[in-house]
Length: 547
Ligand code: SIN
Image (cartoon, rainbow, N blue to C red):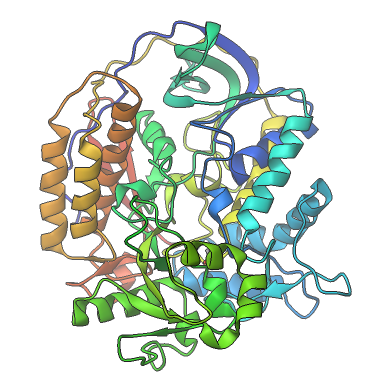
């Protein structure tokens, strides 16, 4: 049942010994919605917080989120209905307790964000505008600046963090490995800072608890809606530390990224699902609405269904895109409701008021990640995970639209509450455990992206996955000297390898994991694949049936 030839992966990143160190109460790694919200709630608990982030504070995925935040804010809507939509999208793998937490605590967290200064779009009477996206059977998505929700959330959190002198921000800091106390508890991290003065190079930050909020891993593919910083650093670090990761085979492909020759990067502009929520249609070359008849919600079916529908057309026609037709929505409406999309498509010479928008699926969201409980605790005491890096159980096999910012808000608060309940004294790190440490060259990155896109993308099969695994193993034989781009490439290789191992094992099609050779969802696979890396650098895989 399980993949026999699981590869070896590094147990730590080869790096120099820390040349400097400092201490804080709680260390938060990452500065998107999850990390900054956690930092602010930790401050409410009176704790000193250090936030480290790989580039600049606003460079993560949050600011790119367009659609919005799903929460029950309409008196006619109910948490039970939101939970139901979330669980349908998750195709049998959502943890009902985690989903209940998400939908019941979500509205309060959104109201807190509003009190903090986030400004969401409102009707003339002052009530919040609520829209709909794929998989939702009610209007429950709050949005800001039309289609610039993530940018507004990031702005509000960024400003709040800057107002607090007890939150220390360290930018240009790539996290390397977890430090653990003699009793196994997380007690800090090593990191590499491109800084000035005392904090340059490899250092250590010691903390009484560590929160991973490093975002996703979309950069394992050649086209993604994620920014270049989304290299799976948190999942890779957690694996090297021996933590459990889960559900990594469930990478969500957003159906509609903008296909344009004028964007020459792995990150593709997102065309928000909210555009379909407002009535835009998907059409093929001949103008036919191919999603009609495939699902009762047509273009607004859950994302995996729409991405698969598009992929089928691409396979049939050999084209690299289908089209989104938003012309009937009118110029004025489009400019007012979707200013970000209109600006990005027009910059590439496509006017959505008069022309069809070329779109195709692109890697968008890791539904799995570092396994946590309802308080955000990982399998390593003192190590928490929040946001896209985490697998809380709310997304199952496929995340429902606009549940991601919500998850960051809800679980960040739970983590802060849990940390405040029982925070031990600062421990000294134990000497690093033995185990191989190595890095691959930065040049591995584009090769890995092409390999993953070819064999482990929207559509997978035993043959494509085994070819991908072989190619990843070949890339893993290469070695380089430690530096930022090599560390990132090693993280990409680590998470890609685990993803492919999981995808080979899961012999069924479920949610966003689509196996050409096993087209249906199977009861025997109703459960989670868990992975850990042991001190001998062996990846082990286990299966946990749903309760
Ligand atoms: C979108 O606007 O389509 C993306 C929202 C999400 O990923 O939930």
